[in-house]
Image (cartoon, rainbow, N blue to C red; front, side, top):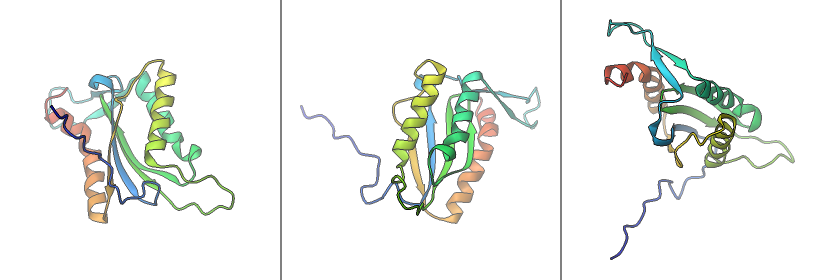
Length: 161
């Protein structure tokens, strides 16, 4: 019996260290709701929805905001920390400094980020892999930004609270 061939999620022709915008989703291990809670809705489904970070969520946010200090040419465009996942819009920019280290790839950045957060939380926090998508045009970027912005509200409307 032949095992099914695993489909590699990366585009073989794409340079993942090139200047691009990436939409990333990192899920917690076993989809544990350990990063945040949805609060502020009360009984009114139309009421404003807010996120309250847990101590693990605070660590995840602090380390996320520190990424541009640790990696030259990395810009955090937008993010949302949900109860069981984190969504990020990350931009890699050209860095033309003589003698500087080569720009890291998205898998390197995210691998180091996840390891650092797990180490500070003193437990394995993340699923092994992550979802990534290269944003190809301005319209797609705007749609993803709206998606990230509306994610907490959608969580409530989907009945996940």
